[in-house]
Image (tube, rainbow, N blue to C red; front, side, top):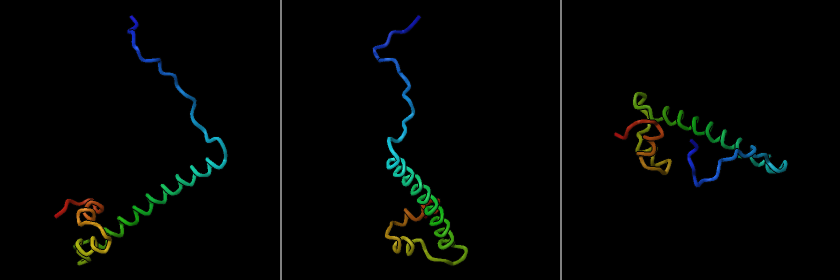
Length: 84
């Protein structure tokens, strides 16, 4: 028993490929920058955790937030901690 539907049958499309080398190069640049961005973010968070470590008597969160130009809750979020 085939159920009738008013929607057209889905047809798979062929996988998209860049039309020329210039577009492919721009896509590769975007991918490379995305990877570098994630690497830089990981390095930033590691340094932030080191500088904000309360056991080592380092900088307070309020000072870091002021220097970064963000709110304290943003620094806590970057550290993966609940705001105190």
